[in-house]
Image 1 (cartoon, each protein chain N blue to C red):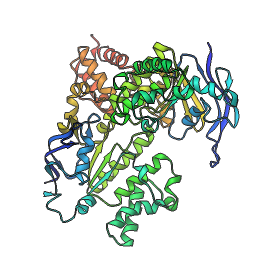
Image 2 (tube, chains in turn green, blue):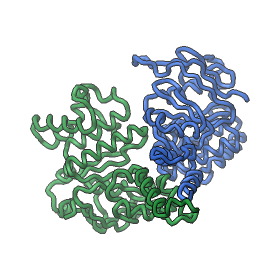
Image 3 (tube, chains in turn red, brown):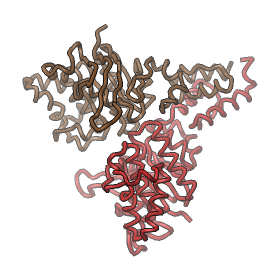
Length: 290
Length: 278
């Protein structure tokens, strides 16, 4: 059974006013437990509105969200139970740090869940380890950390709640390549170790290509496509036309095709590109007679 | 060629830090150049940028803008008119409630004649492609549009040089593309010197010259081709190379003879075409 089901979901901002904008238009989607889902789409395509519905921050105007097959607004006693299961990391989460120590900041969520001190302690250490914050640093102030470190502390605060679905909205914005890689590999590690579901919103097609099992492409408040990563990239030409910033390597392969080569263009990572090129060369006899 | 900005043996430290943020930086920007500054978080790029219009002044060494020293208080006003800065977060730079008022803000403060203000802001808004939003409220614009409004506000002052500190970090691909296009137009068509600090290798690849910083020092300088062809060096500095260089590098490791200098999509595709056909 799908862990999250989104049914006929529509949402309009400023409904009934002159400035009304339709952010979501009849979205239907099922996310299987344990999937790493990448979400891409233009600014204004409805990504953020969609994810704010997943843990009940926004209430559907039409349609419904189901967690474990139960409607989150009518079949749960308390919406907080939903929020403990679906953890949302906002954009620039480092701005939300507030406690005196890193330890206390990470412990805030689990404490609110009413866990014992012992369990909270266990979870804080587990979460800190996932994001690479050493135990000795936990008593320091979060405000003495660098931007990238702060962000990892903020993510640890959500991980410590051990949500079954971890939703991250642009977790890498503003970080250098090493910082990006670090956060994404930690999230991937969390995904693999816990078997939890991860939903990653990103503008970077490269990051999505490298980490996601499935990709949700949104356009104008609707689901343009939801499929395995390879299938999504078979459609690279259209994604590019939608202005979605496809990886450079994919652009190179589209160009090769345009130059008359009969080559696959669903290439989105370097190792896969190398393999595709060598396969082509082999199949065409090394081209020594060209 | 006239020097727009020159930093000589520049040292600078924030008071609460043991290690100096800048450790003997030498840097020159020639008039009309488009320079990209790369480096991992905390390498000192933003600190360096803030020296270019005297937001910070050196502890040791000197920085000059068109031969005016930034440490000379009497020239502060002139320096800030020559070198404008744009920061990462568009929301922190917009002050007015209407786009055209925001663009006019600096000029009003400078006491420019109203008719002259009108002329200059119209021109600045045209150049940055925000003229059509001139009557809108900035908070109704997208991040990329707001960032272009911020750039228009700088351009209206008619600076010779514009320094942009990760202007596209908070933008989506479309917003990034438009901001970068605007920056390139200002450089190529209006001859404004551009210093662009960025984490995006594809943006840096479009510059005339790249300056790479690490731990408060300039560690490498050269054209994008020269820099990105040194894949191992770039990676050792916690940076990336464009995928176009990387594919050539990976194939070279397998014994094929490919150049990592083919960094544009077309060059790379042509090289791979020849590789497959040859």
